Amino acid sequence: MSTGAPPVVDGGTEARPHWRLARAAVLVAVFVCAACGLVYELALVALGSYLIGDTVGQASIVLGVMVFAMGVGALAAKPLQPRAAAAFAVIELTLALLGGLSVLGLYAAFAWLDLYGPALVGTAFVLGLLIGAEIPLLMVMLQRIREQAAGSAVADLFAADYVGALLGGLAFPFLLIPVFGQLKGALVVGAVNAVAGLALVCTVFRRELSRRARLVLGAGSVVVALCLGYAWVTAADFEVTARQQLYRDPVVYAERSRYQEIVLTRSVREVGHADTDLRLFLNGDLQFSSVDEYRYHEALVHPAMRGPRGDVLVLGAGDGLAVREILRYPDVRRVTVVDLDPAVVALASTVPQLRALNGGSLDDPRVRVLNTDAFGWLRTAAERFDVVVADLPDPDETATAKLYTVEFYALIRSVLAEQGRLVVQSGSPYFAPRSYWSIDASVREAGFATVPYHVDVPSFGDWGFLLATAGTVPPVLELPADAPRLRFLDPGVLRAAAAFPPDRARLNVPPSTLLQPRVLDYARTEWRGY
Image 1 (cartoon, helix red, strand yellow):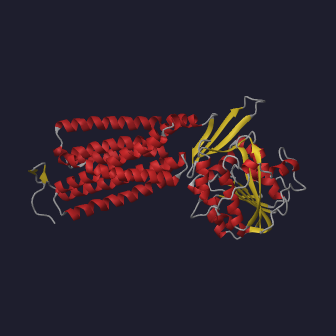
Image 2 (cartoon, one colour):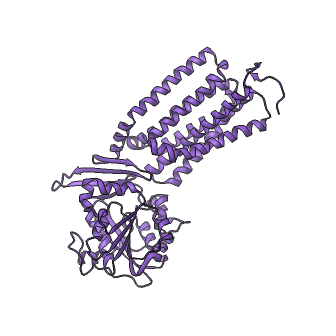
C-alpha cells in the first residue's frame, strides 16, 4: 500500500505530476520490451530449425541458456539500481542492436565460419543477460514514480510482462515472418525495442539524466539507428550472398515459404556432356537433381504400379516428378497429391525448367492437389486408393519424423484398397542403415508385409525404398507387364535391387512411434558428417 510520502529519486524528493500517466508509461515499456524479448527467443529457435533442422534441440538450447542468463542478468542489475533510468536506456539500446542483428550474425556464422553452435549459445546468453536486467531496473523506476507495496508492484510488472510476451509470441509467426521475413523482422523488433526504451527514459525520467548521460544516449541512439538502418538496406544482398555460400551451384530461385526455405540451383555439368543440372533444396536438403532424378522416381513409382492402379495417392512430391511417372499409365483415373507447402507446388507449376522436367504433370485434369498436412488429412480421409506413394522429406526434423511412425503407416493402411500397395522412400541403407531398417520395422508394425530394395542414385548415393501390402504376404517386386519404356529400371536391375550385401544386412531395430520417434534420433546421428 502507498505510504502517502512523496516519491524518492536518487536520495531526494520530487513531486512528480501525472504520476498515474508515468506509471502507465512504465508498464507500456514493460509490455513492449517483453514482446521484443520473446521475439528474439523465437527468432533464434526458428533460425536453428531452418538451418539445423532440430527444432526441439534448438528450442531447448535457446530457452535453457536464455532463462539461465536472465537470472544472471537480474543479479548483475543490482549495482545499476542507483542510476536505474540511465542503465535501462543503455541496456535497451544494446539489446536493440544485438537482438536486431542476431539473425544476421548467426546466419553469417553458419554460412561462412561454421561456428553456428557456439555463436548460438553466446548470442542466447548475452540476450538473456540483457533481458534479465530489465525487470529489476523497471521495478526501481516504477517505485520512484510512486511507492507501492512490493507485491502490488511485482503484480503490475509481471502482468504487463506476460501479456507483452503473448503479443510477441503471436506477432512473430503471424506478422513479422510473413511481412518482413526473419532477417528484417528481427531488425524491426530491434528498432521498436530501442524506441520504447528511449521514449520512457527521455520523457518520464529525463530529469534523472545528467548532461553527460544524455550525450552518451544520443550518440548511442545514432549508432544503433545507423547499424540497424544499414543492415535493413543491405539485408537482401546479404541474404543472397550468404545463401549462395551454402550451395555449390548458382542459386537461380530462393523463397522462404511459411514452412521452409526453397532453393533452386542450376549449373552446366563439366564432366561428360553439357547437361543442365537443376537441383531443388528444401531447408538445405537436396530433393532431386535433374541429371539423375529419373533413377529415383522410376524406382519409387513403377514397382508399386503392378496391380490395380485406378486411384493413386501421393504424399509429398509437390515437385510433380513422381506424378509424371504415375501418369505414364493411361488407365490411371485419378491422382491425389497431398503436399503441405503450396509454394513448392506453385514453383513446380510455373518455373519453365521444372515444368519441362515434370511434363506439366500437376496440371493434368486427372490430378488433384491438396495443400495440407498429410498426417491430419489421413485421419479424416474416407477415400480408398489402389496405390499410395509416400515420397516425403527425410525424418531428420521433428516435423517430418511423425511421417515415419507406426501411427502414420496405420493411417495409410486405413485408406488402402484391397490388393493396394504402399511404397515408401526410406533413405539410404548404406549411410543411414538404422534409420532405413527402423522405417521398415515401423511399416511392418502397422500391419504390412514389406519388400526392401535399393538402387544407386548418384546425387544421393545408395538409396532405399520399401514396397508393402497389407497382411502377411509380401508383394512381388516386379515391373508391371505393361510398364512404359524406362531409362534406368528393368527386370534385372529390380531383381538386383532386392539384394543387400552382408555389411548392410537387415538390422533388428525397433519401430518409430509418435511418443518415441526413434527414426529421428537415428537420422541425426547417422547423417552427421555427410
